[in-house]
Length: 182
Image 1 (cartoon, rainbow, N blue to C red):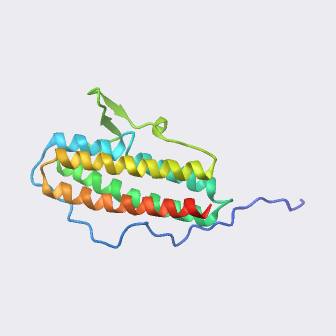
Image 2: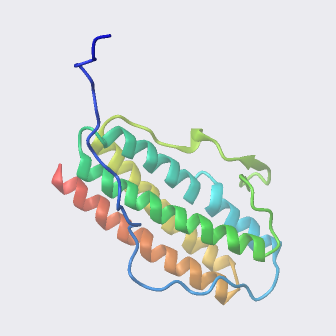
Image 3: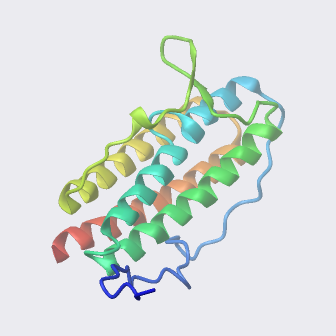
């Protein structure tokens, strides 16, 4: 049997990538008391249209699309996705402590629960558009977190959200630096 000499490969190795997070500690994951209303707000951050789950999924898709063409970009995008995974995990713990259900549904402005869907994502094959979508989603997440902080009267929960915002601001800087490299 003849060997296939026309093999197509991707030489962009992802081993050793670390989450793109500021080297600042996170507050303890704790709450003052159970509060299902606060849990519902955090579920929007967890799996709503603007959410950690949406960010993770969009970044992983972008990383896969970039890997062959722009390996260094793909590695940074994966590092950002990994940080978003850490945020998702912390939000899940807070939701559980607040007495909420950790699943993939979030309350919509209409008052209806809606399951997370890939329709929430902005997918593109163009690297510039991917980076712009990432910057916009990070800005949207920061705005949403700040809005939720204003509604949540639990300093323990808000401390975690404020720390997550710092990472999201860092992600904007990283994505803007990639834009300048294009």
